[in-house]
Image (tube, rainbow, N blue to C red):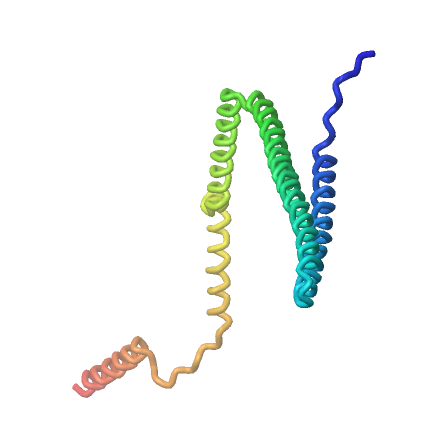
Amino acid sequence: MKFGKKKAPPTKESLAKLRNSVAMLEKREEFLQKKMDDEMKLAKAKLAKKDKKGAMAHLKRKKNYEAQVDKIQGSRLTLETQMMTLESASVTSESLKAMQHGQKSMKKLNKQMKIEKVEASLDQIRDQIEDHEEVSLAMSEGIGQNDMLDMGELEDELAELEMEGLDEELSLPSAPSSTPSRGKAQKTKSEAQELRELEAMMAL
C-alpha cells in the first residue's frame, strides 16, 4: 500500500495550534511556580522547627519543580520562535502573491498601453484642447457690432431724430420781445432820417 504525500496544513491552522500549545505551557508553568513557592514556605517552616530533614525534603521537591519549569520555558521559547517565524513567512508569502498579482496586472496594462497608442491618444487630446481654446477665444471676442449694423437703418434713425428735434422747436411758444430787433430798429431809424430830410427839402 502506497501512502501519498501529506498535504501541508493551512498556515492559520498551524498558527492556531502553536498558540494553543504556548498557552497550555504558560498555564503549566504558573502551576509549577505556585508549587515551588509552596515548597519553599514549607521548607522554611520545617527549618524554624529545627527539622532539617523535613526542610531538605521540601527543597528537593522544589528543585524538581524548577527543573520542570526550565523544560517548559525551553519548549515555550521554541514554540514562540516557530510561531513568529511562521507568521513572518506567511506575511512574506502574502506579499509575494500580491507582488506577482500586481506584476501580471502591470504586464496586461503594458500590452494595452503601447507607445504608438499612447502618442496617438496624446495627439488627439492636444488637438481637442486647441479646438476648445479657439472656440473659447471666439466666444469671448463676441460678434463685431459694425457687422450687425445696417448703415441705411442708421441714416433713417438719424433723420427721425432730426424731425423730432424740429417738431419740438416749432411746438415751443415764442416769447414776446420787449425790445425791437436790430433789423427793425435800423429800419425805424432810416425812416425817421428820410422824414427829416424830406421836411428839410420842403422848407427850402
